[in-house]
Figure 1 (tube, rainbow, N blue to C red):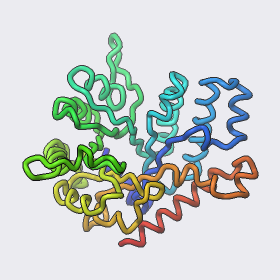
Figure 2: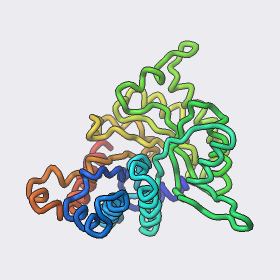
Figure 3: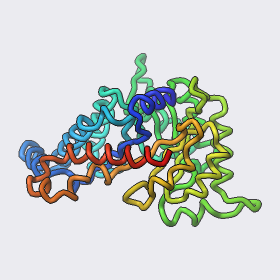
Length: 307
């Protein structure tokens, strides 16, 4: 799957992933009214509003971007209907040729980890039939439980041609409480980075990059520079650009000399861009998708300026 992601990045010239993390407050009034009119102010109504909002974002940006990243928690909060919206969002994005990165941050051991890997990347056996479930292309994985929690994902990646991004150094302010702790004189995130390189060494694609990537926040460029050297064959998913304070200049250490090696996430900066335009707000958000497209174009130009 890493080869498809790189192919899409080269085709679009945009190392960008749009985070489909919709809160109901991001959904324009006219979409909410239409969904609530059909389903009422219910979980089903909320899920329908979010799905239609996502479809609009995808339609407006699919020709500009290589991938989308739905954050599962934004769907889980609406229960079973929300998870149906998540699945339909995945299916719709894939139908447009986009790589789908499921931001699920799963991490457990044994049969539990196997079940997570099956649900999001693999196939579940039902009688004599093997069925795909959510079927994202890549998912995020929390490595805190060690190799026991990661190996089931590696097994499914090898079998299905899928990928994972492992959390190494996250963009949130308190990440250092654990991730920066010294272990034998070195920060923990460096040791995790070494394990990422090890885990991915047998899953190298034709592009030369591994199916095992990592997550390193844009808010820590100096650490990113070190981690880029530790994991030269791992793609880096970079959150924290824009709304969380990361700038285009901060992104340069995450890329390799070939201009590849990183894909930068923006969520609110794109899907909620319309809320910054008084005219679109006054129109009940009717131009939200055009605003998202304009935000992607601006982000692509911003990142291009660092090379």
